[in-house]
Image (cartoon, rainbow over all chains, first blue to last red; front, side, top):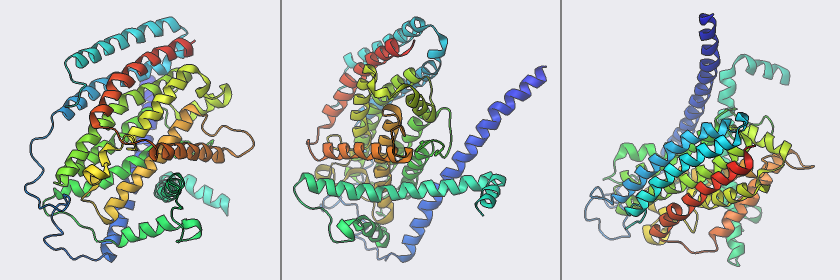
Amino acid sequence: MAELFCHHTATVLWGDRVDTLIVIGVFTFVAILIVGVTLALSHAIAPRMPTPVKGETYECGAETFSDAWRQMNLHVYIYALLFVVFDVELALLAPVALVAKSLNAPWLVFVEVALFILILGAGLVYAWRRGALTWE
Amino acid sequence: MIAAVIQFFEQHPLLWTFVKAVVLASFTLMIPLAVIWIERKVAGFIQSRLGPLHVGPHGTLQTVADALKLLLKEDIVPDGADKRFFYIAPYIAFISTVLSFMVLPFAPGWVALEMNVAVLFVIGVSLFNVVSILMAGWSSNNKYSLLGGLRAVAQLLSYEIPMVLSVLAVVFYTGSLSLTEIVEYQVKHGWNIWHPPIMIAALIYFICALAEINRTPFDLPEAESELVSGFNTEYSGMRFAFFFASEFANNFFITAFAAALFFGGWDGPILPPIVWTFLKVFVMIFVFMWVRWTPPRLRIDQILRFAWQLLVPVSLVNLLFAIALGVK
């Protein structure tokens, strides 16, 4: 019995998943192929005359004085961090949204999601008061 | 003859997938040609001029000529660039576009991969675009590119949150994460847009979509007049063309996604389903262009404040509103 169950789960889950992964793989491969072939074609027919000036970066014609890899605005990092927090929470909401209707308990869903959103909102208010939402 | 072909592909599903992938990826490359031509004509119309006129009837072949020109252009890579990332970035941009088209239903049965978590998949895959922009901006070793790339990351990530929240409102209404099932639900029960919470969600989605595809008033990542086109300044020739193409293909996709979520996808009377899909998509694209050529550009701090301090709270409350009315 247990063997049957495992086997069944395996074919249902893995069968579908592997198929999906293969299709995604084929599409990715074709996308890479198309970009690669086009770039190769361009490489074959386009002229190539590199000069030192051409190899410089274009910064409105002024001479480049240093490379760009220096200290950058850390604020982007805070937004990225906030995004990760929120996006993970939204990913947790997606399964709730999926089964919400079939539960036949609208108030339960409402209260649960409301609690969830309250906690999320508390996080947002915290970030807001600490000044994380203002770009300097 | 046709039966034999069908039988052949039934025996070789992998080959069939390959054919589908090639057709869809070529479609992804053809779409920008049409959209850019329309964009130029609409821009001309709004600015009281004619737009492209000479290449082909009404200038229809202008973008084809431009694509050929880019193919013949020298491929310049800056000496100081981080070559690996510089080469990889356009590939990632194009892969993310093709993969999001993969789960898009054009008409009943016209979907390359029927996926039960299509909505989540699209949200995940479209974020690869951010990676490619950051890669391009960083590896160019150009201060303007880096600034544009960082702005783009902050903006795209910020607007992703309210966008996902408004999409989740639709999921609460329809109880499915599959795009095909969402459209079929609307064919049965009427379009989602007629429900008040979804109307608000659609409005939020529209604003976020403008930001996600870097359109004015949110075109900060490539503000031509201040950043010399931002993250793709150093790209030329075909590499630039792929960034450009995937941006316009994303423009098509984000409206098609909206059509499936809010406007009943292929649903409509008399005309065949595929025509309805394209009709809805191009009407929305026209609205996007209209917006693009009307208001001026905002500042980066205004844009981010708008996302986090207005759109996120509003869409959180709207989600509860959607649950209260939609889950029964």
